[in-house]
Length: 222
Image (cartoon, rainbow, N blue to C red; front, side):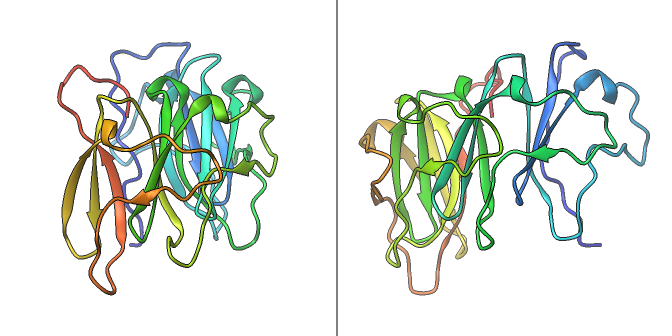
């Protein structure tokens, strides 16, 4: 009760150099070699130990020297190298990936290999793309830098995706409406901008999720 699936990771063999990289809403991160999950029981294996007020929000596979981006609901972000964290066992709690304000939380994690810009979307339907090069590399555990200017008009950030011009994104609202947008239709903006209106929402309706459209089965990045 109260538990839900966070991520589904397709794998082709258990590459000893690959890790499962996890992030929680309270900014805790952890990487564990994927080979530690070679023998999964029917009732599963523990992947991370969580505090009572925390939850796992995203998991991705990484290789040495992958660069990771964390984005928060208050419009802050941090970029650091995967090698900043040493591999931990399945039963470990993890380490601090980002130092959050009390009212803030992580809403998404992306890797530099997934696209050339970050699409950031807010709950009131605003969004923008910002080039990855605008985010300097820092050490994990810091406060990060501004990536989206939250206002009463925009609402909180609800999602982030690393994209290229040829990608398409679906926005899903709390009212059950889905729209599909080509990324080459969204201009590049700086870190301090709030972007433009991507979808018109009825009163009381918010953007709930964003998802990258997959055209080919061969696509491996999520």
